Image (cartoon, rainbow, N blue to C red):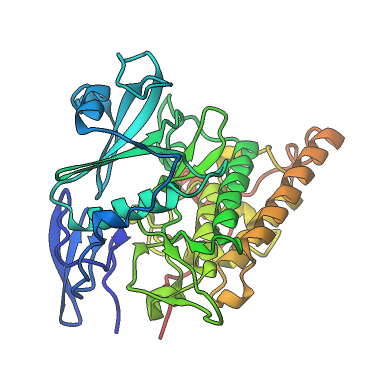
Length: 406
């Protein structure tokens, strides 16, 4: 049996209604999709009670009126982003008292407001408070506090001035300049450290929704993981996995998890591999605007990742001259191992951190030893170059294949 997937998989609640919704069905099961979210049609248990919020001395409890003032009554021009959960607004509070201040004064914050019609959002809101309220790490976004008042559910985060990695990779315009090779490595290392922290023996948390839109960047391009609504405690004792309803994002979710619902830390590793591929290629995990055979990034890129003569076929042409052939190959090979169909062959996040740091060091040393190791060398045409110039690509385009087969 297959699972009907759209941009984001949500299998917890058939009652979830978000910003937009449409009904989808597959194999006779009625599914609900909202903002790209899909439910498998199973009736969920009731959401956890408010009393189950874990106490944390690091979190501030805000009143709704305070956050209303801080965001200038949730004005549309204060919106930083939107999603199935609701909208995120920019606001200002006093550094010491946390009281609302005038725009441009005090500390800038990001306020996520739950869509009142969202049933699933209540559960995700609780998960975010409980996880981020307990964790403190340089590569996890800081949760300052929350609001739990009547039907209102809000979360207050530190403001990340450079926005999401997704914007920097895929948006075109004067504000979002292409990230350099060094900055992409910096972001990859930071995001990997965040996941490694979650996977550590002390925490054993599976993030479950690792993707470019959930990686936020501070003013120095330090990466921090956000949106813990789908996070799940990992297996304990002698258990090898956690059995869950399938949730995540199409294009990023590990194939064995989609097929069985068995969740492990290696599920996050697969998602990391997809994001690393996006950073190397400048392409989205799923892009239906690409030619046939190139819609799914993993399927399209896999044949080229382990061949030094072919990796230029998939590397972002905006990065030309910023890395050596050896360094580019090492990064591509790491991505290839992360997206292995067999989770046993995927590296751990600690191993990934070490390899990425080694790639960073290698890149720096090669720049010092030779200012232009590969710049004078003619670069093979990428698929995008070939298409723009209307000439054949340097390598044949692979045929499309399903993400996984049963």
